[in-house]
Length: 224
Image 1: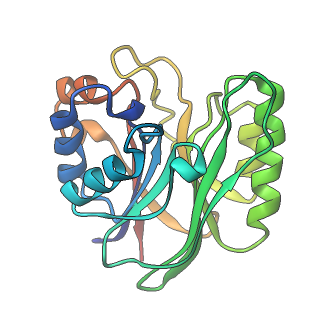
Image 2 (image 1 turned 45 degrees about the horizontal axis):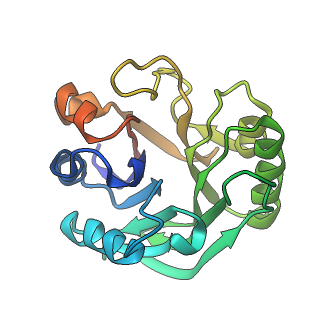
């Protein structure tokens, strides 16, 4: 069965590592929708994000610096409506957090997509997960990103409510890329969707993934 839609989420660590390795992973993975965490945030942030998208054959749908370093990138085959960069409640002495969202349509699939990067503080994660869930509402939505906790965490469970965790079956760790021990990144899709998770090791060599950044990507094909 052929894929209708490929989703991928990846923490690229502000492009501080091997850029060519990042580009190789993106080109060979060929996602239709890329959920980015730790996009560039400071000097020429949006220009760097646009360059990353362009070299990967994608466009910036929403986010980047206005969403505190998370972004949505798509191919031109995906229709984008209502792009938004939303800042979440700021916690004193901690980084500003936000999420990037848009309504995406690809073939028969129409849904709200949100790229998120939760923080290191457990209380803040729970608060932000509740905010994200409330703002996205009850419609068809995909939430993907770096949750900074494993699937038993309360923030993760809040976001996963009513959605399917595409990594739950294999439960493969995503962090760190060099020594994977914890699964803290995932894609949450509507429960009714039929999906096929794809191991990044099926696409590129492990050495390339290690050189690219400190997280392993999560990739899933949404089937008809």
